[in-house]
Structure formats: C-alpha cells, structure tokens
Length: 465
Image 1 (tube, rainbow, N blue to C red):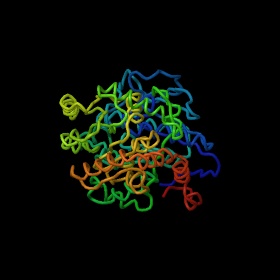
Image 2 (image 1 turned 120 degrees about the vertical axis):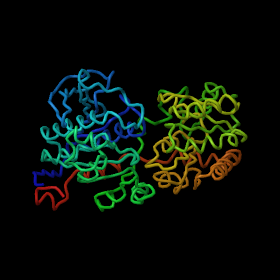
Image 3 (image 1 turned 90 degrees about the vertical axis):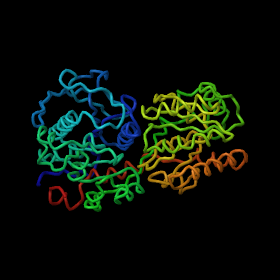
Image 4 (image 1 turned 180 degrees about the vertical axis):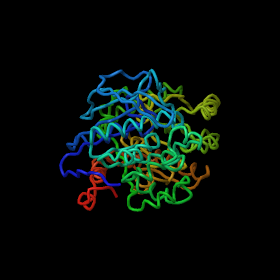
C-alpha cells in the first residue's frame, strides 16, 4: 500500500497509545513503561503525544478535538481532551463518558473489546490528521491501530510493543461481524497489530526468543516468525527519577548505597505495618505483584508451609481475587507471614525498601520491572531464570536464581539467600552491587528512535515495507 513517508532525520513527532499510564491509571508494568519511555524520548528532543482512554474519574481536561468513530454497528462521538504536559510529554484522553463509559481497568482482562476498537480507530484517525512520524501502540488494547492506519493510508509508521503475549484481545466471529473487522482477518486484536505494524517489539531479547517457540508463543509463534527481522526485543528500563530510595516520598526514611540507615527504618516500618515482630536481624522477604498464575503465586502457595518454617519473615503484596483468600489464610496461620491485599504505590514502595530479598518466581516474564526496581532499593531479587529476568538479574549475577517449576528449587535458592544474608560482608557486597546496577531508558529510547524512522529503502520509495 503506497503512501507518503516523511522520514525526517531530526527530532521526531511520536503518538504513544496506551491503556494505562502512571500515575493516572496503573495496572502493571505497562503503566510504568508508558510514563517513562515517552519521558525519555522527550528528553532526547522528540515531541511525544500520549493518548489514553478517558476512564471514569479522570479529569475532563481541555477539549481540543471531536470526531465521530464507527466500527460496524458500534458508533461513538469521541472528544479529545488535553490533560497538560508532564515531563515534556503532552497527555490526551480520548473518549466520551456519556456514550462510552470505561471503568478503570483492574487487570489484563479482555473486556470492553468494542470500546478499545473504537478507541483504536480514534487514535488512528488523529494520526491521519495530525501526521506524526510514528504511532507507538502498546499491547492488544490498541492492536487494531496499525491495521486501521493502513486502511486510512496514514502517512506514518506504526510500532507495536508486546508487553505480555498471553493477553491478546480475543473476540468471537459474531463480534467481528458486528464491529466490521472481518476484513482484518483473525478475531485477535494483538494478531492484527503483529500482522500490520511496520515494526513489532517485545520488552527483552530473551522473551522475544522464547515467544518464537510453541511453548511460549501463545499460539502466535508462527505469525511472529513470519515477521522475521521486523520483530525485535528492546529491553525495558527503570525511571530512576521515580524509583529512588534517596528521594522517594512514600518512604518513612530515605537512604542510598552509601548510607543505609534509612533502609533499616523502612524495614522496621514494614514489619510493624505487617504485624510482624520488629527485628533487624531476621531476613525479610517480599513479593509485590499481580496475584496471577504467571507471577508464580501457585508455586509460592504450594511452598508456603515450608517457607514459613524458615528462619525468615515473608510479606506478600498484591491483588487477585482467586489467590487473595489463600494468602490471607497463610498470614493468619503463620506468625512470620503477612499479606497486604493492596496494589497502591506507597505499599509497594515500602515493600521494596523494607525487604532484604525480593521474590519473583514467575512462570514466564517478558521483562520483569519489579526485580529491577527491587535492585535499586537494595532488595536482592530471587528470580526464576526466564525471560527478561534471566537477561537482567540472573546472568549478570545481581541476585539469586533458580530454574524449573518445583518448590525444591525455589526453597533451595531461598535457603542459599538466607545463609548468605547471615554471612554478613558477602551479603553487603551483593546488595551494594545490586543498588549500583543501572537499567536506564536511554538505550531503549535510542532503539525506538530507529524503529520510528523508515528504513532508507522505504524513504527512497515513499511507501511501507
């Protein structure tokens, strides 16, 4: 499909489409990425406009545009509202509370498919009118954007980032007819994005390789293999302005690698608020995350009796109806186990800062931002060697790791960590190495810059791949 491509060599204009962004709406790591990556791009001199659904309860903002959007029998009049500039990025909400109300998302639940298709079409229409160099789409919620950009012959590149291949935006054939999506093929919004985007990325090289196999490809490995070199891994970073124990407003005391007195204060506060004995000598192990099977919570619950028998304290933080009751029961039964059914940022930050070790036993993990954040807070990660965690924590020797899917290996790694903690100087050196590790957004931003620009051959021909 021919179309004009500008292909500038100077600063770029990028539209960033996402279902969540910290601090307005955050479900998981995507919310942090959506805040940090555009910020890093803006610091490099690019203009970035971020587009978010207008969820119930978000500010009304200043209306800057309105457009009628249709997808089959579904129709809505969208208003685009300017929410102001944050860290050099212009935020916009897109939607209409009267005709298309959205509750704030509680998880990666594939609901409101029609709403996200309409939102995607609105984002694509805006790109066709405002003419950015690229539209960066994130996960299945906006997987329809690259396909619709082609229909509109919009003069911009599209980049799709897969943050978790397990969530795909599936819909039945009947809904495809109702939404007028039959021409786009499969009833899968993420697959539409993979098929039609100019470039497809995921959030680590290791996870990219894993998703090319049937074991971790979630039924899309064949489609991903077809994209060949257009599918790449770009490792996520950490926004160290946001995650800094020396300046974190959520902590009762600040600290850094040269002075850890504040970390001891945070540990005592975490023990106190968790109903655990305040004891600086006992190792405190934390888990922070969504309580879903992917995060390894079934393994933790299978091993909870043996965990509780260790000379350590355990604090679990997260939400997920299926598992909350089991963690709550364990906390009631064992005096060294605590559970916070909470996903608020201050609770998570205290868990990072107050713990000595951080559990991340995920069955699979595209990147693993939580262990990277834990490093900065001096909580040594214990990870399963999968996905991005093998690339960032296990292979560089910044933490503890195990392989396989049985509790003996988890418990063995944890026992090793407890022994090393009690060893004194060796643990102090490991913690210092962890706190000094840096995974910034600079390298990722540079990689995306290259993807936003069309290849030289396309610039000369003036059309897509």
